[in-house]
Image (cartoon, rainbow, N blue to C red; front, top):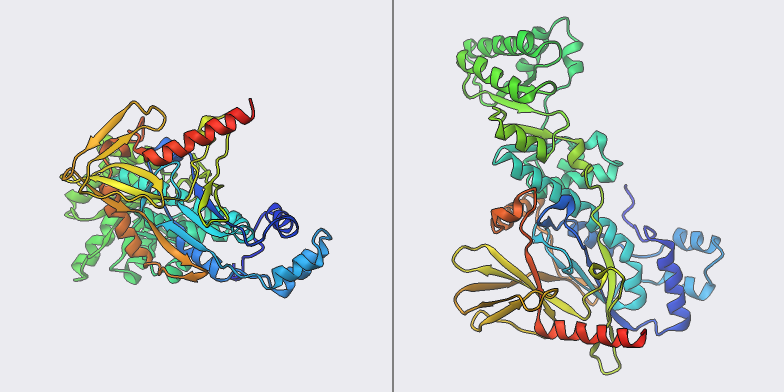
Length: 486
């Protein structure tokens, strides 16, 4: 984890292809690669983009040091002149990307790399590793937070994460997606995000009795006193002992600024209702009732529907691993090659599966909003040289069923380009915001989604359309390729 140079965090075939380009092609041939994904995680209607800050750090540190070259030479598959080239390697290309925290949809480029082919090839694996992981966890967090309907969600998954890096950067992504904090102290230090936690059952069990354990904890942390009440018996022991401690604190003149209980087992809906009644009758109407125990968005939604009295949630395993959908599925595909005249020649990948047919060319994305609601209407993928404005009517059509069309008149919509320059000619031109600022941006982004797109079952699919020019280029390439292989 402490190694900043992740250059060898790549698949071997990236390097073998690079050597092939080095030997048999123009190593300076400029190409365009797109990183995108095909399906939203968890059957949802959207995803959240995350990981750009780590991608930037990776590119900045991209170089082969002496140990790297020595190791590659030991594989006996790379020639000396190629290894000499690698020893002086530096990324000189340009990268455009969708900012972290922005809502994203399938088939649109999240990252666009314009670089000499050898450079663009090398960075594929790391880009996908970084963006896929953090976008997955940010999306899962957004779903969990949506289910909680404004209640605070704390990320508690470090001990179940798939290794240290997944725990650290997964917690960062979870905060971007909407969590109010994390139990991961190192993530708190690295990214200046709130760290939160209570105590374990072992704390209770280490004392002669539950009351003494609660009282000791309350004396140490009077302004953050959340007591875990299910070690022995939640109703008969845990909650009564917590109430006893709260009464003693009040009688001693200690201000109860943030206090309450945590449930970690049993029927959370039933227990929360009983706890709320007991706390209210004792005069602690503002006591927090928090819960953990294998929570996810579906269980939280069900508990909220049942009228549970929980207002704070600690979500661990199912969030940090995105347990029901553990991979994001992003891909990285060649989209264009620069010709001798300096113009990009579009390239397309065909497939037996229509969803795997790529969108060719050097592209950009406009996001279209309804002017009066501020809600997203569609995304429009177009070629880089195309310009659309709010002053002219905009005709949208479904690229899969092009007879389905929508015309937007001036004054009915607003436009925003959602890809930003990150590196230009090898120089970083973008500064990542602080994680909590990205979280705030993500919250505003989610507010532009229709409720129908946020629902968990059969969500409304946001339209991702192609411009007429890009559509025509794609159809022409499909016709040409189809004729060639008939």
